[in-house]
Image (cartoon, rainbow, N blue to C red; front, top):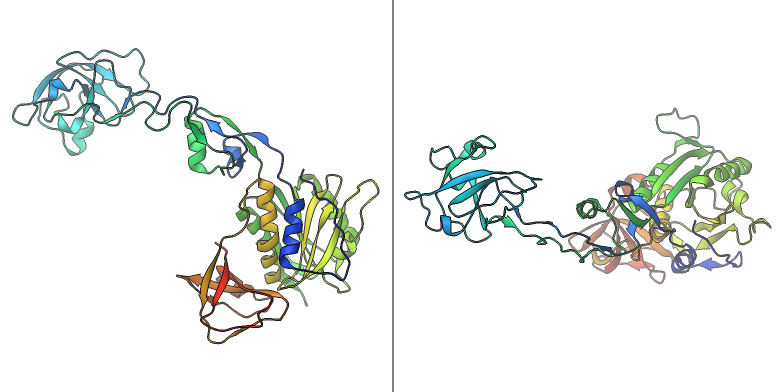
Amino acid sequence: MSTVAPRTAGPDRLWSVDEHLDDILATVRPLEPIELHLLDAQGCVLVEDVTVPVSLPPFDNSSMDGYAVRVADVAGASERYPAALEVVGDVAAGAAGLLHVGPGQAARIMTGAPLPPGAETVVPVEWTDGGLGEGPVTGMRARSLAPEGATGQVNVYRPAGARAHVRAEGSDVRAGDRALAAGTVLGPPQISLLAAIGRGTVRVRPRPRVVVLSTGSELVQPDGELGPGQIYDSNSFALTAAARDAGAIAYRVGAVADDAATLRDTIEDQLVRADLMVTTGGVSVGAYDVVKEALSYAGDEDEPGSGVEFRRLAMQPGKPQGFGSIGPDHTPLLALPGNPVSSYVSFELFVRPAIRTLMGLTDVHRPRTRAKLTADRALTSPGGRRQFLRGRYADGTVTPVGGAGSHLVAALAQANALIVVPEEAESVAPGTEVEVVLLG
């Protein structure tokens, strides 16, 4: 498990976005490496270099269906004067005890089959009569070679240079080469390479297990029937999907009612499958902000350094935040606000980097760029706060989507970027170059 060191700060302190993020990244540690089978390691990060034990390909082999021959025997071949060669047998993929190709001879060879001793090149079947004595093979007849195992004669109508249509041993990678470097994220191409060089398992940092839990007695599961004053729980779905997008194995817990004891019991029950806990809602100053009530403690005597600290950040949206650790393994917990946009923006800024850190990645942040602001009017921002507005980025420009309200889920669904308005700016005019966080 990762560990979180204790922190101290006055209750009235106003944290900056960077201070809060730095505190999280300074205390969340990468997960311990484990050995996993290849498919279980998909999405994980290598912790050591992988060296090639056997060259790829491990032997010279044919890249075409055709005939393995000597170069001199087909040097003058043409449509009018074909080279007539004795077919001495077949070489199939996986063949052992290869036959020998001597002067004036040819071996019928399949794609991927080893080049037999004596042969110097491969003539594609389309350049021959296929051993059928009916002229050059074309179209579907390119697959209609003489019956397997047949010997006899093949006419070759074109010359082939040395090692034509031959994949050389080690032409992909050679034994002793570095196949993959430590820090590589294993996707399908990397897993393919590992399998190709004979690696069945690999040492990686596992994908972190993230438990997402929303709070609020007003929340109803999708497909349920809404009662008076109730809304559907969207946050837990959004954050679970975002955690998976970040590379985690994410578990969604149904919304917990506004009861501190129930919430505490639910969190404790979930710790067995969590490398990181994420809650949403109940972190402000209202009478029913149960996350603060349930988790605002200095920690048990038997668990020094545990506890969650709730903070005010100089940002909009997402001013109320919580961060700390819980349980015997000091599992990190990030408590996010409950408004949908506040919750999602907070995830992108704080939770995603924490997940990527647990994975052992060095580049944990979303990419950023500069873009020209296109808007009908100037953007306004509260002084002293860093504002993150939803935007649509394309071709070096960014356009605001929706307003600044932290409840505008429909606008969030149309955005592919966050427009960053710095703390010192209270207005940003159209045409100004702004910083943009790219969301995907």
